[in-house]
Each structure stands twice: as structure tokens, then as C-alpha cells.
Amino acid sequence: MKPNNYILFIEYDGSKFSGWQKQPGRRTVQEELQRAAAKILKEDISFTASGRTDAGVHALCQVVSFSTKQTLKPSAFRLSLNAVLPKDIAVSAVKKAPGGFSARYNAIGKVYEYRIWNHTYRTVWNRHSWHLPQPLDIKLMRKAASFLRGRHDFTAFEASGSGQPGKTVNLKEIKIYRRKGLIVLLFKADRFLYKMVRNITGTLVDVGLGKTKPESLGGILRSRNRSRAGATAPAKGLFIREISLKYEK
Image (cartoon, rainbow, N blue to C red; front, side, top):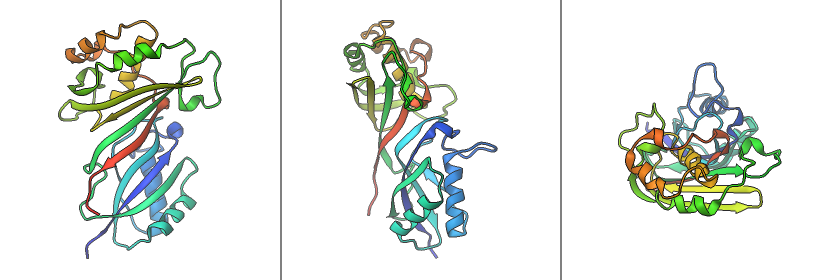
């Protein structure tokens, strides 16, 4: 009997998680999902995400695939999961998937969002943003971002310990805008290297603070040298916003 394949669209507040991937002795999103599914289905379920998130990183829309021996009614399973999941994880949709579907390998594009609270006073939403009281010049940041758009080797913005084969990424879009005290950076690409968004964000912040010239971003990119880029931005400001999938319905 062939297993039935499904897709979960989930969101989570990563503040109290040690990331997506299940780890001994640590609270993770994957472990909480597996525990909830086992309670409902009375079956051990293995979940695969479109990409792992680090400790403290959030998701507005993460895509997760799984297989089960049972035939599920998507709307009913969504309600059941949300009834037993902790309050910092929510399932927004469940869909039937074709055989062989993998959230990891069928993901063809991702959008990440990074939030910076750029004001002298703090906010109660600080756990979801990087608080920088010094004023940032977003015009300079936008100019610097223009040197990163396109298909490039992004080794200079990859953290060590990745192990990902190939360093070429097609960074299709970087948008930077301000909503009162909140600065939002949007990154759209076919894929992302390990901590790439946070490392680019840290470098763009240096530009916004006047520590780095916008024109230097091209040289940093071509150097393929991580030490030439800025510091890694904190995880708490990062969100997975959107996943593009390729599959036959």
C-alpha cells in the first residue's frame, strides 16, 4: 500500500525554540510537530521542512512535507493539529501532495524578511526585531544592496559549518523600506546559504551607520572572504516569509 503524502503550511514564533531540527534535550519545531502528529494519528511521522531555521528564527510561512499510511481530510487534520500544538506554532493549511514530493527538494524559491526596530526607545515587540537606537540611512543601504542583486558566488556572506554544495545564489530582489520606527529588509532568491541573510543584513547595517561605503559591497562579494563582510545580525529579527514550490497537483 502506497503512503499518502501531505504538505503543511505552518507559522511559528522561534523565540523559545532551538531551531527547526530535532536535537536531544532541546525544544525544536520539528519535535513539537512530530509529538502532536503522533498523538492524533497514533503513528510516528517524519517531517521534512523546506529549510532548517536556527534558534530564535521565526516563520510566517514554513512548508513541511510528510507521509502517512492513513488517508487524511486536510481541513480536519489542520484543526486537530492546532488543538494540540503549543501556542507558538500554528498550522495555516494542509494539502494533499503527489508521490515523491519533498518540501526540501521541491522548493524553488524563498523570501526572507528581516526586521530592525530603529528608534531610541525599545518596543514590547523587541523579541521579533533587532533594536538599533542609532539612526540608519536606508538610502545608503539600498545603494549597497544593488551590488548584491543577481547571480553570484555568496561565499563572503556564508557562515562556517554549512556544508552546502555550491555557493552560487540568484538573489533576485532586496527591498528595504521603513514603517515609522521599523525597517524591513526583504530578500528573494532561489536558495540561501547558511546565515546568508543575517550576514548580509549585518553588512548593510554597517553601511547604514556610515561604517562601510556602499560601493565596497561589490568588492566584498567578489573577495569570497567572510571576514570582509559585517557581523551576523541577531536571529530574532529573521522570518521565513514565503516558499515557492514546484509540483504536479
